[in-house]
Image (tube, rainbow, N blue to C red; front, side, top):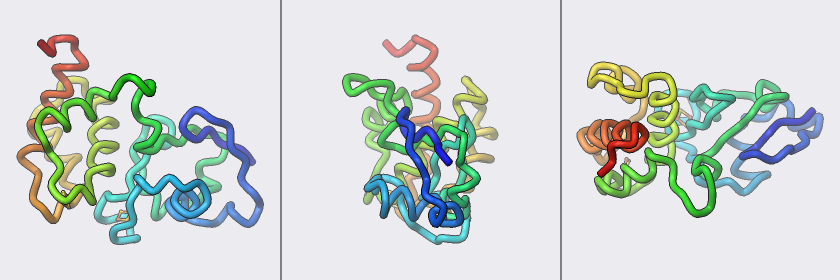
Length: 157
Ligand code: FES
Ligand code: FES
């Protein structure tokens, strides 16, 4: 079984099929930007993209990713020289506090913008309510998502 992990083809061994994707990413692939929070699909810290959908890697078995594209925070930027608009906005607005939840927040926001390029506050709140931040960075997250939408639309400056 194979999958595309951050634009690279990777094989999964038979014993890895039933392992949680989060465990495989962190322990087998060394992609520790994807965080372990609750382990129960509740907090959003482990959010990655499966094809273009945001999924919770802690409750997604590896075999669900077979034949699909998996993107983690390490593979979100379009190149080594450029940031994803969400990453750019996050830096501009200094969203992160302790940072623990932030890779999941960014992956959730990027998936939201892919579906809704100009999201309303209500659309942002609906999606991002599933991403917990113990530091309470929610206001900056909402502002940064609007800023990322601007950047993506080419009206950045
Ligand atoms: S660690 Fe996966 S949702 Fe919390
Ligand atoms: S920035 Fe600390 S938990 Fe979100």
